[in-house]
Length: 349
Image: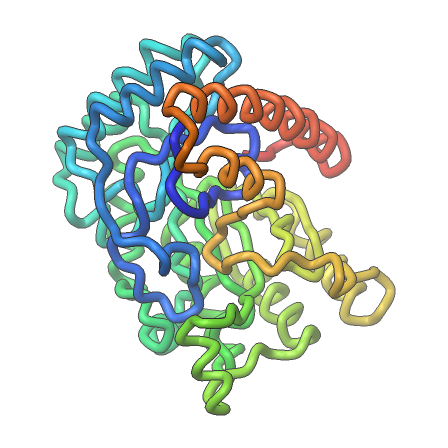
């Protein structure tokens, strides 16, 4: 596989094959995010993407069960790129059971109902959407680009096409609107009714607009008790039909796992225990300074990309190295996911 720049994926896609179909993010204005600020957005030539899939199939073939289509908001690709990609993936990976990508509400809005139906029928089954908050004031402050109503409409249309949603909320991003942020996010989760719901903790990354705001005294991440209180409020008030819930991202102080609404009382009790000092928190040194958008860029992955990125390597050598390392990575991560599921119960996305 050929990758350009830093590569991010959701934690639950650790064991997925990643194909970079777009470069960067078509929006790229969110104040907290630095994932794609070093990239100029563009769609890769479909011939190159299909070539990458062909090479991956020769090396990994029947081992690939999940495919994550990168970069940011890849749903924004035109249909004449999406449909050949999905067709080739189905043809090349016989055990493929899930194709997913990041998406913004505006990406969904730009697709017709017929487009969404066609994508779902072709195999795109899961969209990772990061509204981060259900509070419209907060969404405007962080330059999210889409508000509460737009996210609800996007969710309804994705559901109608048969796609599942994984929703990402961002603890602390509301700053001094902590209570409004938490309550609004719970309402949004209820309205969007995702199959998966995860919460991350905002990280003020140097060089982002959010870092500039903090330097000017206009933003501060709430203290840990306030972050836990936000999490408690979201879990207590959200009413999804059935959502696998996780806070296993490295940015969080309290890793949790369960299914809402089934495990609501147990999760709230754990948060109360953490607030009272009876449940230990993840130490600061163990928290990952990862982008708040839900993406993860591991040290191992960064090393892999550096190997792929040397200009003097031939394309076939880049692919060979990347695929061999990628296969080892997939097997390690799949084993880690199985161990996690055994510890916290079934239901990992």
